[in-house]
Image 1 (cartoon, one colour):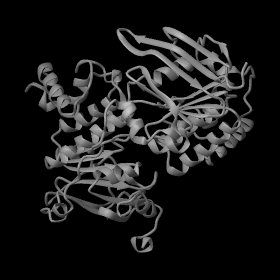
Image 2 (cartoon, rainbow, N blue to C red):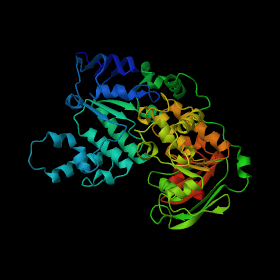
Image 3 (cartoon, helix red, strand yellow):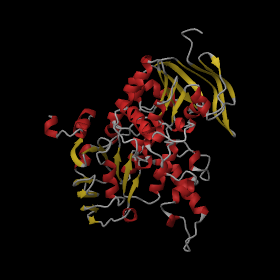
Image 4 (cartoon, rainbow, N blue to C red):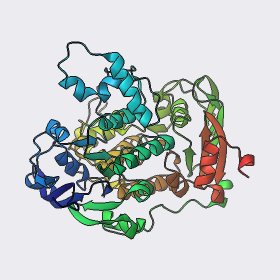
Length: 509
């Protein structure tokens, strides 16, 4: 076999799910010792293609070659024996098992031992985690961990396999900057060992910083393959969406108008939960998009949860249009027009097995029920169609399951649920996490349109370009406290990172 032959090659891959065509004659190749980015909008076929390589789905047509030999991958276990590892975008761990048990699950299942040497298992797990810069307790149950730590356990599982091919689907979506740096250090080590890495991400900076080549899928077809060094970010986005996104971020509100707006819509004073939020005060004006930045674990989500009653406030006050609110539970916040979108879309954003219409009406049953409390299906359908049209929701119909939608459209359903409550303040925690560039731009414009209609919008985001491009002002949280506020020309990635790291405004200058 030629040394230049691809490590992995796919020819003419086809896949249908019922009448829906997911892949149409896709060509893909992976070289030894390269990081090959796979890009495309949600629904373009990226995850389907990777699941075919990993043995989860059989192809309807086409050929797969590994090390120059044609292979028929008849299941995930066979794929692992062939040296193919997949880190799923959706976390698939056993919550009631320990970190170590999850990391070595395939080995534990294959073992014929009567007794497990947990000392050895925990020690080996600790070594794998250390490669990722983690000192996580391997004896801890997975369901006790935050999402970012669970994602690292998923990645650690893949590192224990004797891989030739490693596929990572949005691996940094829930990771901190430090954790992401540690992950890329490991990936470059694996690359140097000749392992081929397929990297799926919507984060342009990661793709261009670490990728060697890129393949773009659009509508189930491969539309571009080439060296990343020969491509600009704008050209890559055009290949992904098939159009220009020149106005990727909507125009911001005029800074002077924001500064001289009428009295604040929302005033938060000395809010604290006694654990993660320590005396934070800020104001939000009507029609403003206010960003909240900070490192993972800084207290951003906890601030939003405390504000809307999902966490108990130990002290502080919240005023809405001059009225002091008493918020002890989330229902109180909703009753006053304060709605919250969780960062965890799957667990707390949408009900995947319910229809689009049922999801959208779920937080506002009074809008679609009779005086006897019975749901009126006609009213429910009408509400879903109205809000779906407002958000440009793409689905097979409002009666289809939310699980059948792309990530971006699931996020739109989650936003529509909130809009059904007629909110005055929207708290959006990672509103574009895990969605493609086209859907991100649409969500940015949706949030700006809501602000233009007088809604106060708060956006929590780990993506600094999103904070800078979308928000009128940004608050930066550090260790549960307000580190500073930036706007205008001061709102740069460097400025936000310095505040997030604990430097004061004075120290920055």
